[in-house]
Length: 425
Ligand SMILES: [Zn+2]
Image (cartoon, rainbow, N blue to C red):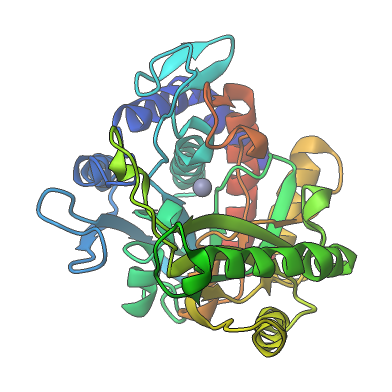
């Protein structure tokens, strides 16, 4: 029977390419959240023709939502002939801006040399198209299947997912008993299963000073110099300490298999808007620094924060007039699905059938919508699995391979079959 399923997927190759091209042609750049509604409607209408129940859910009032840029999500559901588990394929329809350096039109969906090019081809409209083809072929091969299948197209993943998966999770769309297993076709490479991601803490540190005339800086107190002391302490102590913290999580690339911190931005003193004139001679009284700390399953967020505040408190004791404030901007706990979870085992079986090898199990260095499914939906049987080469995401001339999409559609269809039959093949 599986042979027939795989043949049905092969037969759909033109449809798979056409669907990917169509999806890329909706320029769903985020920010600002362009063309979300028509893209969601396009996907909804296609699945409606296949007998799915369609819901459009707008996340009204979330940051970014407006009449011009409505945060429209689509959820499609098909109930089988008999009761059983529900498998949900979730893809984000938003893409990052095209940026510079393209050799093709990023929103044309150019097909050449066995690839589809375009912004979002890899991350993750190719994955969305592959999951749709997998499901449609499966439904043709097994019209009497038990359980239910859902496909969603959600927004704002690239900006945190608050208008997308987080919003739907709050409404119960990602919880049992409605849903049992979730596959997110993010571009993690066709023979790898992504079990989860590291944690995130974003914070803003602000040092204070006192404004004075720049010709007599000794009369004031320079907030930028205080921040310089913070950065120096980070260089001397914090960065080396983070480098030494290794994790057992199989994070890829391997460089991310430890704690990291990025200095995201720094702003102190006058901005550049004095141009084309000259700045006025002031001692800056404020300096702000944004940090982006990625932490491990082995770390507790309280300790992660204490490492930073410990340095700041010590500076406050040692350095005359040093004072600071720190504000949390975002926190996400690390998450890792167990290797023997049903969705992991089912997709691993598919990878073994298609590629004749064991999958690699990986952890993403950055987060994606799985965090909301775990934290808000309390659903832990969730992975990311999809075609597309992770390193191409967000870059110019982004592409997805047609053969890769076909193979990963087969893996998804085999996994779906196993999950709907309660783990039996
Ligand atoms: Zn993505």
